[in-house]
Length: 145
Image (tube, rainbow, N blue to C red; front, top):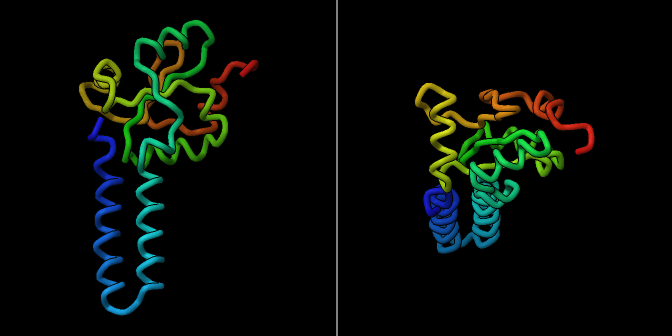
């Protein structure tokens, strides 16, 4: 669980150091602006940007019932972040599995990608697709969603 927060924490710590140096150098406005930028970058790379994750087994069970895609992701992944932002509000209609929090999810991704943990991996009806376009993912949603 802590692994997902390492990058955002690093951004926050670096931002604090840089802002402190600016503040001590006599530029409190620059210090505040730099700290704000680092905090925002850290927030964007945190798990908070993604919809709530479920376990791989639960996501597969729910997907079998309603046909919605399962997205395997991890915090700090630029491609996952890009997919999340391009999906917009539609991202809430998918089942998100954080492979750093769920070992079964990581195993599913490795099985689909020749042993690699390549994310985002989207599974629709048991068929995986690596780093798909957001438009394709939207097309996979059932009409009722």
